[in-house]
Amino acid sequence: MVFRVKSVRGELFALLTLAVTFVVATVILNSPVDGGPGVYLNAVETPKLGPSPSSSIYLMAALAAIVALLVSWKVHGSKLGTGLFAIHDDEDVAEVMGVPTFRYKLVAFAMSCALAGLAGGIHALFVSYVTAGETFNITVPLTVVLMSVLGGTRHWAGPAVGAAAITALLYAFTAGDHAVAGKAAVGAILVLVILFLPNGILGVVLKKRKGVALAPSPLPQAGEGAKAEAPRAPSVVTGKPLLEVHGLSKAFKGVQALDKVSLQVRQGEILGLLGPNGSGKSTFINVVSGHYPLSGGEIVFDGKPLTGLPAHRIAHAGIARTYQIPRPFKHMTVLQNVAMVGMFGGASLPRAQATREAWKWLEFTGLQDRAHALPDDINLHQRKFLELARALAARPRLVLLDEVLSGLTPGEINEAIALIRRIRDRAPPSSSSST
Ligand SMILES: Nc1ncnc2c1ncn2[C@@H]1O[C@H](COP(=O)(O)OP(=O)(O)O)[C@@H](O)[C@H]1O
Ligand SMILES: [Mg+2]
Image (cartoon, rainbow, N blue to C red; front, side, top):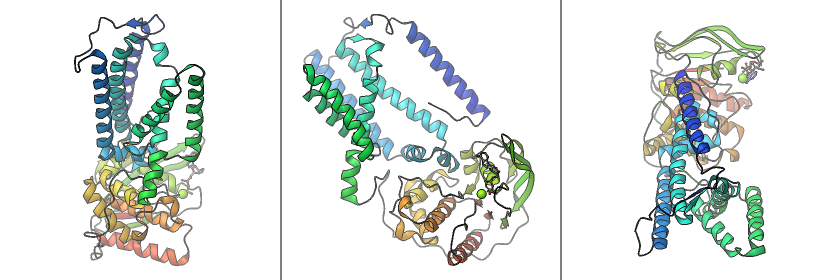
């Protein structure tokens, strides 16, 4: 497990987590559970839920399964679930779009551990014997991973479907030589599923039924609220600086990509950064948006220092960006990509409102007909405009556009220039900068 640490507070937190893990590991290592003969639990009484101890254990296991499914269903439809799907697709981009990735991963680990602990407690009562050797060998985690992959990892019911299939298979081959055959079958299924069914059984079934990829949320249709607002009167450059960068430096080992860059972007201003390939334009955007930590200098946004803040806090402050090479979340539809930023970016909208606004931005950028397509199924021009729609969905005060016109035809470039002017003219407090 790797946590990317981006702030002093995050560092302290990571150290604390490591320390706690170390203490817990030491306690476990020193107990007779690990390495020793194990612990018999005969003296532990089974809670009386049913007429007999075995029926009680069965009821507890059924209850744990229902609780796990409920948690999975709840997380799947929640903001946490959407953030986790985004982290799965591209963690760096998720952070820049406003997902507090460190916290979300920690919550996911904590919830998974709680459920595993609950299941382990019941299993310990069932076998009335606890030992680390057998529990932590490769078979258990492998079977659990296979259950999720086989059923479908992007649907809340996927692991349950996979668990039913694998359990039935293993029980069908319990005796003698068959046990080995069962294990071999599990291995073969794992390989085949990874190769041919990356979305699992439920992925295939639901795709056939809906004709769309698995969605973290229901997909509303275009309709009310989907009309693009008419551009407002052009805003004036008010003169108040929105972004102030002083002496910004960034070095990649030997390469000094930015050397003491200072500039100002004022409200209502469209500022272009010009330079040949490799002159540091993308690096500037990467550093200001928090994608890379800076090596020196200071960034002030609307009078508040941003230096050293994690990328999701910079997004919440009102800075949105596009990527020179589009980096959409690959397993989310075009609409979900945009709505997700509405939920996590500076606007922090509830899902329904973020989806309504996403339709508006898709219409604004001419992508409404491709709303239910996956990013891999649209062309480069459309992917660039998806980047733009995503940046706008955050309701940013400053948009950093990284070569949004490169690779486009002259006709598409004219369209894009008109669009950037329309963005600037939409809301007086917003401002754009492009490279
Ligand atoms: N992640 C990285 N690791 C190492 N060097 C990098 C990285 N990103 C950019 N650079 C280097 O920094 C310089 C500026 O690159 P970049 O900002 O992409 O330029 P531009 O966008 O103006 O074409 C280049 O020399 C490039 O090789
Ligand atoms: Mg570049």
